[in-house]
Length: 219
Ligand code: DC
Image 1 (cartoon, rainbow, N blue to C red):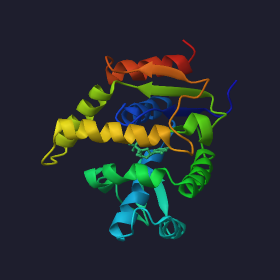
Image 2: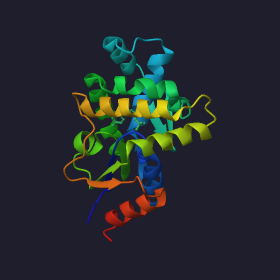
Image 3: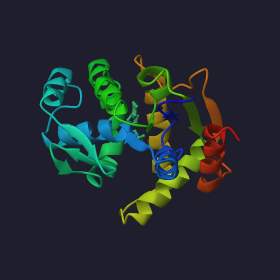
């Protein structure tokens, strides 16, 4: 019998990880931890403070003085709720550069492991099954074609009322983020050997959620 349920969800940008993870968390009563949101929150702070994105020392210094916490599925940066701000396009454009810094990753992994110890969890990101929680009970690698992922991001930005959204531009940006995330030296995006791979290109969210829950529940 499993004492504590730990589920790791990895995959590229726009594959639907966070939507799927939230729904699974809801059904199985798990704590949901969005690690991408943590890198996004740090990126927000770096941009707001006007720090050069290449100035690693300053970024580490600011990270040491920054609090990133979750409460009730909301993320707080130094005590202020920033769910909306971290999804802005200016964050999309810079977050991969912050996330590729080795020392930033080391600190984030420490915080993520601590967060995972509190209860039954589902954690999503890029390196959860490979680095952060290698002993997770279940690991899933969620993918979709790059065109489908760009299309999902495009619709998401439109629905949030963002102006000047351009599909071709988003496609280019997602390809660039895929490139940085999968080729970086430290903890690149890759499927853990023992992860179930699910290509969601032609699946609905509901189908993906059901498939994962069936696997976890051993059906
Ligand atoms: O999942 P997301 O799009 O919110 O992730 C934002 C960025 O953070 C993305 O470029 C990859 C990076 N990331 C990472 O390197 N490791 C994680 N565990 C989560 C996200």
